[in-house]
Picture 1 (tube, rainbow, N blue to C red):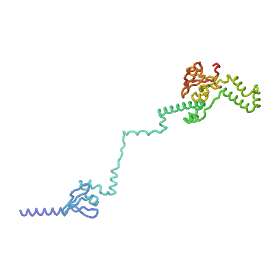
Picture 2 (picture 1 turned 120 degrees about the horizontal axis):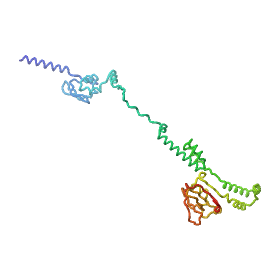
Picture 3 (picture 1 turned 120 degrees about the vertical axis):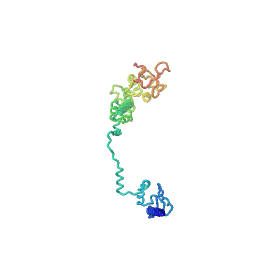
Picture 4 (picture 1 turned 30 degrees about the horizontal axis):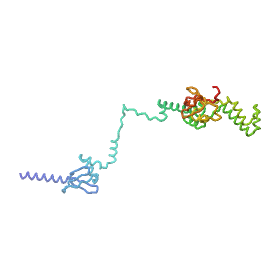
Length: 326
């Protein structure tokens, strides 16, 4: 029995000495060494149960040497905590890069990429784009037509240039002054005024001029009277749609005397004849006018008889003597 106790004592002593001899060493980066057993490990570091007794404070992983970290990485429980702090060798870095490489395998049923966004020119080639271009061109031609009528320019010329220069040609013609078309009556009146002015300034020159035309020289008053007597048919003035644009500015510019309540000597024997869609109106005065229509006081005996005539319905305007026939 005493022999059995001796053997058991010898075995326990040898196991204790083996444990002491096999105590782990934890080397730190600053050269210190902690001897003992691993007591606790987490993300903040580890705690060592010292072989001299007691526990060390929790040392961060970054304070340990690479050799100690590599030894701790062999423990499956501690390896995930230690690996981020282990410096890899160049061969290990290349091996990890090879593992990270992604090999793209060909796909048989790959979807086609969407078509690239079309440019501005390609957008107008589409059916919708062509419709938009056609609408813009028609609007351009309509604007050119209206500008040609407003400025009394040739419609074919303005529309043709608008096709070559869309938008720009109508703007250019709109900036030009209105082309005034003078009738024979206006030209005759201007010639008579010029001859009268020459007669006042140079009687001899006027005498020769009238002599060449088969007339006797006369004074200023007799000349005006002769012109009035001979100009019964020459006083007829005709303005037609297409040659003139009938609007408020046209009537205020051409016929200012017809707006007076008491007509002047020049307009007292004249009437304004308006041929419209609804009929023909013979008036002696324009009583009211707006941007779209005007009111004409008729030649009838009733002074309050007047008619409203829209500008869009007017076909022609004629100025003639009140006793002249249509």
